[in-house]
Image (cartoon, rainbow, N blue to C red):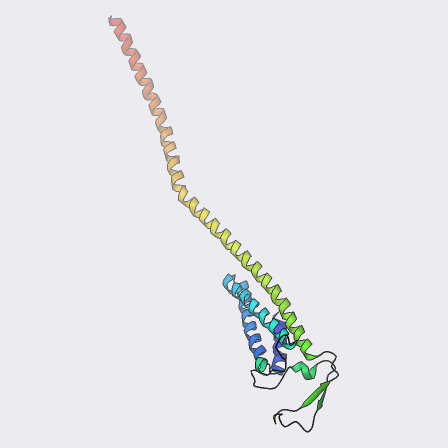
Length: 219
C-alpha cells in the first residue's frame, strides 16, 4: 500500500496536483502510524488508521467522479485539484502511453506566458482513465487494509482480555491461600487434641468403675 501511494505521489508532484499531493502525504503518515501500532500492539493507532481509511476511500471515490465528470464535476476545473495555482491537469495527460504532444503556435491570448499551448493526440489510454485506475487501486487496498486493521484490533483486544482474566484469577488465588492455611492449621490442631480427649475419657471411665467397685465392697 505504501509503495503504491509513493508512486502516485511522484506522478502527482510531476503534474502539480496539489490537493492529491496533500492527501497522499497525510495518508503516508497515517500508514506509518498504523504499522507502528501493529508492531507495538497499540489498538488506538490501528483504530485511527481504520477511521482514516474510510476518509481515504471517500477521497478516491471523489477523484474518480471528478475525472469521469459525474454530475456537475468537470476535469477541466483548476480550483479542485490544483487550488487554482496552475493550469496543469495530470502528468499522464502529456506522458500517457502512445500520446503525441504538439505545440500550437501562436498561443492564444488567454494562455499565460510561462505556459505552452499544446495538443495531445494518439493516446492508447486517456489520462483520466489512468487516474481512475490509480484511485480504484487505492480503494481496493484501503478496503483490504480496513479488514486487516479490524482483525488486528480484535486479536489484541482478546489477548488483553485473556491476560486480564488470568491476572484476576491469580490474584484471587493469592487471596484464598491464607484461608486454606488457617483451615489446615485447625485440622492439625484438632487431630492433635483428639488423642488427649480419648485418653481423658479412658481415665475417667476407669476411675468411675474403680469407685463403683469400692462401693460394692463396702456395702
